[in-house]
Length: 361
Image (spheres, rainbow, N blue to C red):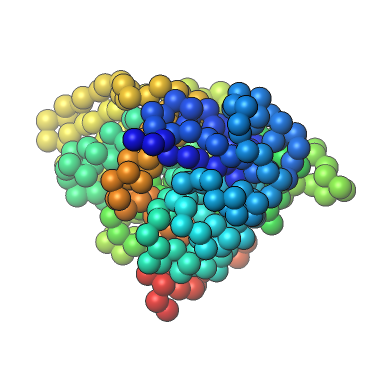
């Protein structure tokens, strides 16, 4: 089979991460890149080590050349909407990094533009693919905990990394921490709950990180810790415990799903899965690894596994495993969380969703 020809739109840290992952995927190759930053383009050219790599400053030039089958959009969050709207006018397959966009209206625009399109539009919520988390999803869906009643996700880790032009230091660019970082976790909550989120309650602040930084006379405004409670139509409750000044922890992510039969947990980067049952108080533990992974990268092999599925879906004509509707919902939950913090009250999803995920008011 002819290889799937990728174009990378955005060649900063995550763009180069995708480049390295795609290089290990059989039947796929990066043939073109686009980025307005000369430094980012040069760094990607060095990583690609390909003499015939097409290099563009603007994504429109890459799309107009017509030499790619698929693109990865890994640009700063605030640029996703325009790039997606341009890209969805073509017939190329799309994998867009999280978050889908940074406002509910922008996300809905993308959902509407993608409707009826034959080519894939796939949202890069790759935490689904981390081996212990993927197994946790499998076990929960298989009934390991019975009927799910509670989901608890803890992320305790290091502060935000430095990005091109420090775009991720300001809410207006990133959508805010609960959109930029935590859309991953809201997506996982939705998977486990299997129901629509209806209400969000949050408390959070910027207490430690970036307070001594100054960019064009402006101090960053992204929060660095929060608790977020999500209530679902089914009665399931979910909690996010976020701290971005907690480098001393053993695991960055700890995910627990509890039902009427038992409790299942996944730990990253430890890679452990733990399942306990109420009836006999038995406990099963194992270390989980996916033997298909050829490149671990920044996310424990999850980006590699995501590309395997993406390429397979292109070849087999399958629907995206992570849809634009999934991406919209994860973003809007983060927006609701930020509104709850700002207004010191619970926020109904209907207040911020605007249109439903099916596009109907």
